[in-house]
Length: 176
Ligand code: FES
Image (tube, rainbow, N blue to C red; front, side, top):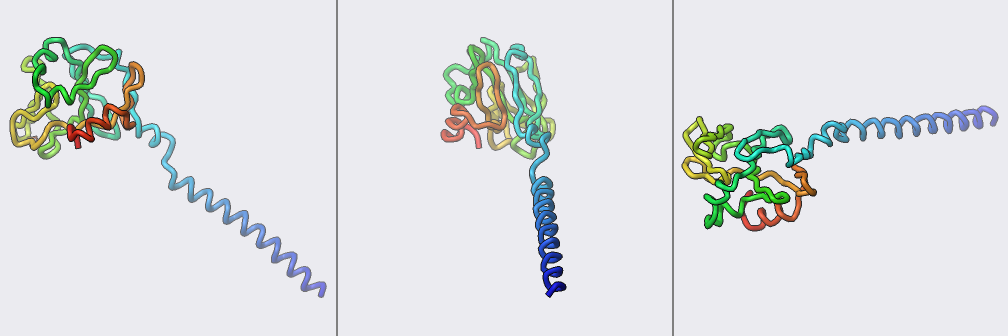
Protein backbone atom coordinates (compact mmCIF):
# COMPACT_ATOMS: atom_id res chain seq x y z
CA UNK A 1 0.00 0.00 0.00
CA UNK A 2 2.73 2.34 1.05
CA UNK A 3 4.78 1.19 -1.87
CA UNK A 4 1.85 1.71 -4.18
CA UNK A 5 1.29 5.27 -3.09
CA UNK A 6 5.02 5.91 -3.42
CA UNK A 7 4.86 4.54 -6.94
CA UNK A 8 1.84 6.72 -7.54
CA UNK A 9 3.72 9.76 -6.34
CA UNK A 10 6.76 8.88 -8.45
CA UNK A 11 4.52 8.32 -11.43
CA UNK A 12 2.88 11.72 -10.98
CA UNK A 13 6.22 13.40 -10.42
CA UNK A 14 7.62 11.74 -13.53
CA UNK A 15 4.52 12.66 -15.46
CA UNK A 16 4.87 16.28 -14.36
CA UNK A 17 8.54 16.38 -15.33
CA UNK A 18 7.75 14.71 -18.65
CA UNK A 19 4.94 17.20 -19.21
CA UNK A 20 7.22 20.17 -18.57
CA UNK A 21 9.80 18.53 -20.84
CA UNK A 22 7.22 18.05 -23.58
CA UNK A 23 6.11 21.68 -23.35
CA UNK A 24 9.74 22.81 -23.36
CA UNK A 25 10.59 20.69 -26.37
CA UNK A 26 7.43 21.83 -28.20
CA UNK A 27 8.48 25.41 -27.48
CA UNK A 28 11.98 24.66 -28.73
CA UNK A 29 10.55 23.04 -31.85
CA UNK A 30 8.27 25.99 -32.52
CA UNK A 31 11.20 28.35 -32.07
CA UNK A 32 13.20 26.33 -34.59
CA UNK A 33 10.49 26.52 -37.24
CA UNK A 34 9.60 30.17 -36.66
CA UNK A 35 11.68 32.41 -38.94
CA UNK A 36 14.53 34.20 -37.23
CA UNK A 37 13.78 37.88 -36.49
CA UNK A 38 16.33 38.86 -39.15
CA UNK A 39 14.60 36.68 -41.74
CA UNK A 40 11.23 38.20 -40.85
CA UNK A 41 12.65 41.69 -41.22
CA UNK A 42 14.26 40.62 -44.50
CA UNK A 43 10.79 39.89 -45.89
CA UNK A 44 10.21 43.62 -46.16
CA UNK A 45 12.45 46.33 -47.48
CA UNK A 46 11.46 49.92 -46.79
CA UNK A 47 12.74 52.47 -49.26
CA UNK A 48 12.86 56.14 -48.40
CA UNK A 49 11.94 57.67 -51.74
CA UNK A 50 13.49 61.03 -50.89
CA UNK A 51 16.90 59.38 -51.39
CA UNK A 52 16.69 59.01 -55.16
CA UNK A 53 17.80 61.34 -57.95
CA UNK A 54 16.22 61.66 -61.35
CA UNK A 55 17.63 59.41 -64.06
CA UNK A 56 19.98 57.68 -61.63
CA UNK A 57 19.25 53.98 -61.51
CA UNK A 58 19.81 52.45 -58.09
CA UNK A 59 19.75 48.74 -57.37
CA UNK A 60 18.20 47.86 -54.02
CA UNK A 61 17.70 44.40 -52.59
CA UNK A 62 14.54 42.61 -51.53
CA UNK A 63 14.44 38.96 -50.50
CA UNK A 64 17.81 38.43 -52.13
CA UNK A 65 16.65 39.84 -55.47
CA UNK A 66 17.95 42.99 -57.14
CA UNK A 67 15.33 45.72 -57.29
CA UNK A 68 15.76 48.46 -59.86
CA UNK A 69 14.63 51.91 -58.73
CA UNK A 70 14.63 54.64 -61.34
CA UNK A 71 13.23 58.06 -60.54
CA UNK A 72 11.93 59.39 -63.83
CA UNK A 73 12.69 62.87 -65.10
CA UNK A 74 10.10 65.03 -66.85
CA UNK A 75 11.80 64.05 -70.12
CA UNK A 76 11.23 60.33 -69.48
CA UNK A 77 7.63 60.99 -68.45
CA UNK A 78 7.10 62.93 -71.68
CA UNK A 79 8.45 59.99 -73.68
CA UNK A 80 6.00 57.62 -71.97
CA UNK A 81 3.01 59.86 -72.65
CA UNK A 82 0.47 58.16 -74.87
CA UNK A 83 1.95 54.70 -74.22
CA UNK A 84 -0.65 53.07 -71.97
CA UNK A 85 1.54 50.04 -71.26
CA UNK A 86 4.37 52.22 -70.01
CA UNK A 87 1.98 54.49 -68.10
CA UNK A 88 0.37 51.49 -66.39
CA UNK A 89 3.73 50.51 -64.91
CA UNK A 90 4.43 53.94 -63.47
CA UNK A 91 4.63 54.15 -59.68
CA UNK A 92 3.82 57.58 -58.27
CA UNK A 93 5.00 58.45 -54.78
CA UNK A 94 4.11 62.00 -53.76
CA UNK A 95 4.84 64.14 -56.82
CA UNK A 96 7.53 61.86 -58.21
CA UNK A 97 7.36 59.01 -60.68
CA UNK A 98 9.34 55.81 -60.56
CA UNK A 99 10.07 52.61 -62.33
CA UNK A 100 10.45 49.96 -59.67
CA UNK A 101 11.03 46.41 -60.82
CA UNK A 102 12.70 43.13 -60.06
CA UNK A 103 16.02 43.54 -61.85
CA UNK A 104 16.09 40.14 -63.48
CA UNK A 105 15.69 39.59 -67.19
CA UNK A 106 12.41 37.79 -67.85
CA UNK A 107 14.18 35.62 -70.43
CA UNK A 108 16.59 33.55 -68.34
CA UNK A 109 17.20 35.70 -65.28
CA UNK A 110 20.40 37.64 -66.03
CA UNK A 111 20.71 41.12 -64.51
CA UNK A 112 20.41 43.72 -67.27
CA UNK A 113 22.53 46.87 -67.15
CA UNK A 114 21.05 50.36 -67.23
CA UNK A 115 22.38 52.52 -70.04
CA UNK A 116 22.04 56.08 -68.88
CA UNK A 117 22.70 57.67 -72.27
CA UNK A 118 20.11 55.55 -74.05
CA UNK A 119 17.77 55.54 -71.05
CA UNK A 120 17.17 51.79 -71.32
CA UNK A 121 18.37 48.42 -70.06
CA UNK A 122 20.44 45.94 -72.02
CA UNK A 123 20.71 42.31 -71.04
CA UNK A 124 24.17 41.12 -72.03
CA UNK A 125 23.18 37.44 -72.01
CA UNK A 126 21.13 37.37 -75.23
CA UNK A 127 20.71 41.02 -76.16
CA UNK A 128 17.23 41.60 -74.69
CA UNK A 129 16.27 45.20 -74.00
CA UNK A 130 13.87 47.02 -71.67
CA UNK A 131 12.84 50.66 -71.74
CA UNK A 132 12.83 53.04 -68.76
CA UNK A 133 9.31 51.96 -67.83
CA UNK A 134 10.47 48.33 -67.63
CA UNK A 135 8.73 47.15 -70.82
CA UNK A 136 10.54 44.63 -72.99
CA UNK A 137 11.46 46.40 -76.24
CA UNK A 138 13.68 43.75 -77.81
CA UNK A 139 13.34 39.97 -77.62
CA UNK A 140 14.04 37.38 -76.36
CA UNK A 141 12.53 38.58 -73.00
CA UNK A 142 8.88 37.51 -73.23
CA UNK A 143 7.58 40.35 -71.03
CA UNK A 144 8.62 43.44 -69.15
CA UNK A 145 10.33 43.37 -65.79
CA UNK A 146 8.19 41.90 -63.02
CA UNK A 147 7.13 44.35 -60.34
CA UNK A 148 7.65 43.35 -56.70
CA UNK A 149 4.73 43.65 -54.25
CA UNK A 150 4.79 47.15 -52.81
CA UNK A 151 2.84 49.46 -50.59
CA UNK A 152 3.14 53.22 -50.64
CA UNK A 153 3.37 54.67 -47.14
CA UNK A 154 3.76 58.45 -47.29
CA UNK A 155 7.14 59.06 -48.89
CA UNK A 156 8.20 55.49 -48.24
CA UNK A 157 7.71 52.36 -50.24
CA UNK A 158 7.47 49.01 -48.47
CA UNK A 159 8.57 46.14 -50.68
CA UNK A 160 6.94 42.85 -49.74
CA UNK A 161 3.60 44.39 -48.73
CA UNK A 162 0.63 44.51 -51.08
CA UNK A 163 -0.87 47.98 -51.39
CA UNK A 164 -3.85 48.97 -53.57
CA UNK A 165 -1.61 50.29 -56.38
CA UNK A 166 0.23 47.00 -56.65
CA UNK A 167 -2.99 45.00 -56.41
CA UNK A 168 -4.44 47.01 -59.30
CA UNK A 169 -1.34 46.29 -61.39
CA UNK A 170 -1.71 42.59 -60.71
CA UNK A 171 -5.44 42.61 -61.43
CA UNK A 172 -4.81 44.41 -64.72
CA UNK A 173 -2.09 42.02 -65.80
CA UNK A 174 0.65 44.68 -65.66
CA UNK A 175 2.81 42.26 -63.68
CA UNK A 176 2.71 38.56 -62.91
S1 FES B 1 18.64 36.31 -70.07
FE1 FES B 1 18.33 38.32 -70.78
S2 FES B 1 18.17 38.13 -72.89
FE2 FES B 1 18.44 36.10 -72.20
